[in-house]
Length: 173
Image (cartoon, rainbow, N blue to C red):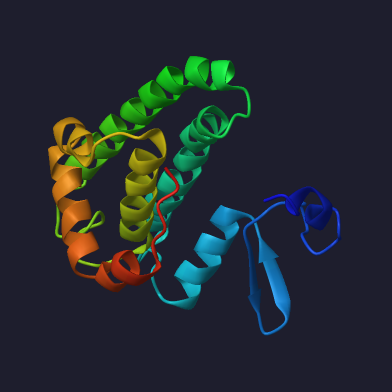
C-alpha cells in the first residue's frame, strides 16, 4: 500500500485505480466492465436481455452501496470512520433486503435467475460475504435479513465457489 500513490501515477492503470485484468497483453479496467467481460467469456451472463439486465442491476447496485462501506472502513481518520460506519451498515442492510425481495420475485430458484449458474450468483456470494467481513458483521445478519438469499449464497459458496472460498478468497475486514 505504501507504494500505491507512486504506482498509480505510473501510467500502468487506465484510471489510476485497480482492478485491472490483463489478458494476452491487453488490459481491462473497471470492476463491473471486467465482470461482464468475464461473464461473457465464460458464458455466465443471462440467456436473454431480461436476465442480462438483472445481472447488471446487481453489479451496478453494488457500486451504490460498497463505496460508502470502503469510505467508512478504510478512512484514515478514526473519528470519521466511526461516524461513517453506521451509515454504511444501514446502506448494506437496505440493499440486502432489496436483493432478497428480487430473488423471491424471480422465483427463489436453485440460482438467482432460476436453474442456471450466472455471474449474478458469483457477484452476490462474493460481494455480500466480503462486505459482511469488511464491516465486521456476522454472517448470521445476512441470514436474518435475507433468509432465501442466504440459502442461495451458502449453496453457491459450498458448491460452485467452494474452491474459490477455500483457496483464493481473502478477507478484508
